[in-house]
Image (cartoon, helix red, strand yellow):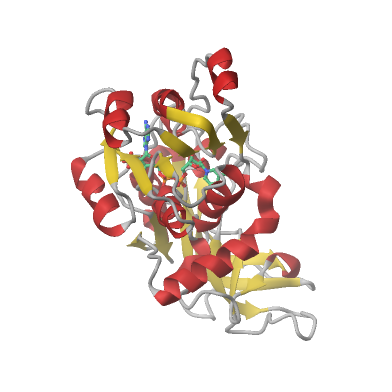
Length: 340
Ligand SMILES: NC(=O)c1ccc[n+]([C@@H]2O[C@H](COP(=O)([O-])OP(=O)(O)OC[C@H]3O[C@@H](n4cnc5c(N)ncnc54)[C@H](OP(=O)(O)O)[C@@H]3O)[C@@H](O)[C@H]2O)c1
């Protein structure tokens, strides 16, 4: 698609899903390229991310601290694009034609973005613009402010092969963790955790009780937990938690994967009190001030080779719904991006 394009495609929410996603929940509409007004930029999107909370935002009542997707309207989410036009952009804003910017109006080939919401990435911490779309900052927030991972810790990360988890294990290791254990869904993904993503051992959902597997993988107990799953996996982590362990609650995939929002656990509070366990709910938005630091640290690690950014790329906006579905089904390792 060229600059002179008059029309472009956007992906709209056609129906609110009750369970697993299918094609009928999305509509790919061809619409006129919008005109930017003063104080806005027209951006030609190059790359967008899909992530698990997008499934939750499709619900009638997502229960997340961000706007849900509206029926008949394009979805939205993190994207990187090239400024085409920015009438009246203030000098020094960096919003010049050709500049790459990060913004939150993905799921469309062209986007009109408020100038204040378009962040130029030219002088930023990442060499590869795709890294701005990683969930590394959530992992950083969980590892530092949430679970306070420190030298010598044994750490457990659930959904360890996903967008957040694939960074969480590596970052825990960089913070000095001695043993890092992750959960995933298959032996093949477990091998990748150990070979490529800084994990020492994997436990597998669907391969017997997680608590038994975790006990075998962490015979000395667990000091820090990054929980992205809830349910049985959180229960197992709490059962194995050492005195004064820190538990960061970041996600609830065991409920979210099929469209729900709950991942309940039964807690023995007397037992948790006596062991001095700290459990923290960690909505990323409450810790947004840590995001620039996260990108700096992750950028440094990606450059010096101490970190890797595993991700899959699907080509074409028409494959964005499939990309989201494949992410939820656990078909990939790391983030899932769509090239537009
Ligand atoms: N607190 C925050 O601010 C914040 C920010 C970003 C994301 N999150 C949350 O973090 C969680 C992970 O997000 P993400 O974007 O990184 O997604 P993701 O981990 O990339 O993708 C989801 C992964 O969950 C696993 N999974 C699927 N169904 C599952 C089930 N029934 N039980 C357990 N695991 C299942 C799959 O991995 P395997 O095949 O390897 O099991 C899949 O790859 C989500 O709950 C998301 O909402 C929170």
